[in-house]
Amino acid sequence: MDSHPVFPLIVHDDERGILRLALKAYRDDLGHEEHRVAAVVDGVARRVPEDEATPLELDAADLKVTWSALHTLLDDSVRAQQADREHLRALLDRLPGEHDVRAIDLDTELARRGA
Image (cartoon, rainbow, N blue to C red; front, side, top):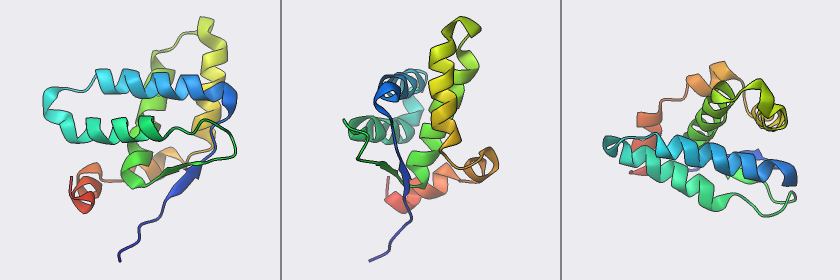
């Protein structure tokens, strides 16, 4: 059996809502032709744990879309949303760095999944 690494993301109770919002907003911005990416986003959203003790396990495709969703919402937020911005930054800080995430080829990862 081929095993692929997963990244365990701890989502604190006060961050769960903003993570779900980021995923939903990202999903809503996808076009029809991006149904494979939408399926990844939907899968991550369904697996957001209900408690801090359970990490959200992200494979490379999950990691790429989660990072992208968080980063997009952070870019779209304004200073008046300071609490949300702090939660978004905290989640992004617990993920691998931008260069590592940008190096993930989503098409390759989706093909690996058979999606």
